[in-house]
Length: 146
Image 1 (spheres, rainbow, N blue to C red):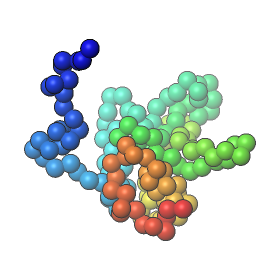
Image 2 (image 1 turned 90 degrees about the horizontal axis):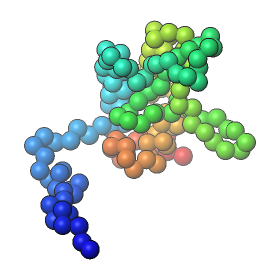
Image 3 (image 1 turned 30 degrees about the vertical axis):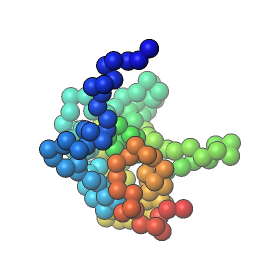
Image 4 (image 1 turned 60 degrees about the vertical axis):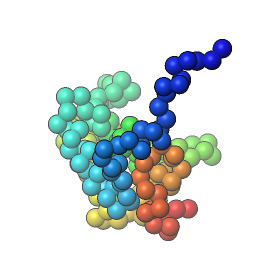
């Protein structure tokens, strides 16, 4: 049995060929600006995604978590090794929205203004291994890719 409705299906290529506006391509150099704009936009939102209370942190001195988002992806801050396996550090605890924003701002600055090679390497390698991330991977400096 064939699915008749598939004769009218739309592919990703069809959608991209018929765009009226070009897709904005994020590069490595303008990634910090994009993340900063995203953070500022999120702070004005009614339901912020980057700094919020979580059940995991409930009842502790740090009831909130801060995380950096690139579209629907959580950007890792770093890596820790647990039982010989590497795990991405995706959130940091914070006491308030102000503290969380300060932590996220310092992470974004580490990607650009005050380059922190360890942070840059983690983010660059994370981006390079994700197919669904739309950042132009050719713009990532090769010395950051390990």
